[in-house]
Length: 617
Image (cartoon, rainbow, N blue to C red):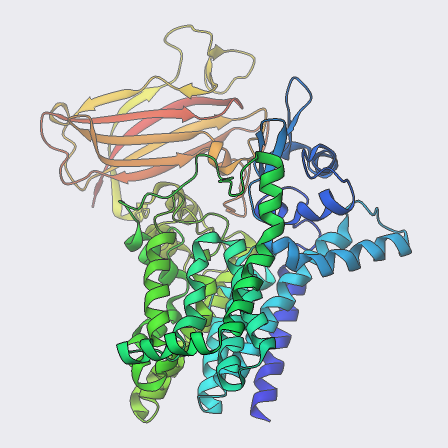
């Protein structure tokens, strides 16, 4: 009864949240990873242009024109695929497309029969199909994980473990909000591999050998760097040299079963190999072009603990699974060796990737698939502390809060209150458990510095004012007015900077500078990373002591204080932020610089840039 109740609660939580959060109308319309996974299906089954994708991309352009670039020769270019010789090669492998396929077929048949939506591969039913696939595969993974854990742990321990992974981790986010991404699918496949491996060693049945091979094959196809998954069937219940020798003899004795596993792994990868060979001439083709790994400089610390998508910052409850690794040999030795090996190498590899913070996620995306392996040490941790009553109840209170925090921050993400891929501690602190945004939180997100209470400061003096009335250049315009005759129209580039040496001012370390400007735009810049910024830099011998910036367009008429606000046209807005003077800013070689930078061709108009000196009361 307890199992069914918890299972029903998790099911209802996922379904309700999916209905509330999921963008099941546009998950594959405008590009991104999900589009790259999915494109194989319409290109193969509808447009028959898998070689150059031009018809498929043209249909995408109808739904999302800004996501497609048309070159002078008429070639349609997108970020998810690259021109190679006379072909266009999809950057992503086809593993997720294989898992999407049943849902795609149902959506296509529905569109053909009902005739209410275009059967074009991108209308609403296809988007629904991809999102529903994400939800159902995650739920399947949780169900199979429950069945596997229940073979070795008590019912209560299993329920706690499943609840933490389902509701306390970012698996929830990728199943109900950011659907279509690969990580929930990989979680399910890892669970299938573990389930089939345990079942095979108990029964020696060929059907489990096939299932092991297919799951390992799909995992390595979706993310080739996860080929280490094959260690699961090879090292299951192996934790010593003697057991390793015994396993070698076992494999020789059951060579047909392991041959089936190997053939299944290869077979599931053959379509991708053929695709690469036909389009590139190579059996194995690196489709990520200039994106790669830097194994000499991994970002493990930032990847695990940083506020820019750090794993344990946004899924702190999984810290208990890491503690449980110490108890794994005692309480579940079957998975100990391969867990240690796979987890260690996985962490090193994923945080050696050039984009180690993995944009487009809530917390560290590539750790989601590891929850299948980490479920065992998590269960071991609770087994260990189960009879320590005071500790147990204290931990349950903490875990309950962390589950609530995960659900709440997912809601914040949905509302646009948080965005984690380039967040920082100041922003995290400013928005923590808040149901509404604030100006201070928005400034902290941009600048990485928590804003002071202005009531505890007093104005000292004005250091600098640029009203753009001093000279004429092509950037000084008069068609728009604010205060005086001229304003400055900043196109792609920098505005002339203000510089001040530390010894030329009575600015003291730990004082504050208030940097402000009036801003105006005639066009909106929707790309969050290409919006103009106001910059403050404290330098010592040309090296930054402290560097802070503030996005400008997001502050124009942003009454909801949303990170994703693109501004409002034809309206002047006063923007400002405080920056604390660093301790080191005192030597003759130290220089303060204030300037504006516009990284795009969408212009921003500025007037009355000021630098003011404020001190603590």
